[in-house]
Length: 218
Ligand code: AMP
Image (tube, rainbow, N blue to C red):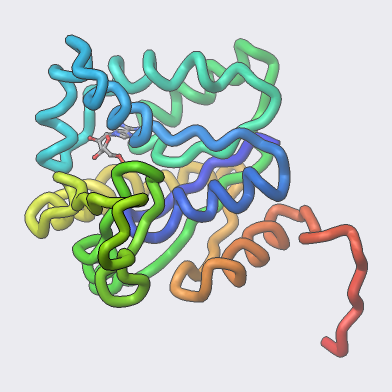
């Protein structure tokens, strides 16, 4: 399965991609994770892209395309955070047709900006396990030396969040129309619980969750 997860920051693309990867065996490819790994390694490229990341700006297309390319060659993937604008979408289309592959679907996760800001500004990540918490809804364990320290991403600071959402609305959201015209788009309400959203995504993509056919009343 080759699927793009589209949606604003904080809509849960990464969380959903992890769930879907477990359930379908497709590989989770997050360009944001690739960017953060490069920065953490302190490579020359990492230093170059850090300022974009920390300000919540997009890394230049040529760089991100080169970073993503080797990860797109496998059998199946769930793309999280790529493409982010029409130029990247066109580059992806071209790359896929060169490889003789095609997209199976594009899932747009939708949630209002106010909720996204609230989710992102409270987000904390365990430095050792990568597990994500929320200061109010899922607080990091106190005195938990196994998982701490709990870090706030540079780009989860208020100003960077607003910047990222503005860029999303300007540059990424128009991709919904781009993929809708190709008959690939499905939209899912991302304000519901994590398992409900996963189930809805699988249903929308036509992969029934679980083989057991539980016929309900409805
Ligand atoms: P994310 O975790 O997806 O929010 O990505 C974190 C940061 O990585 C973004 O704010 C950008 O600086 C960079 N980045 C990730 N994916 C892309 C992309 N497709 N195009 C440009 N920059 C990206």
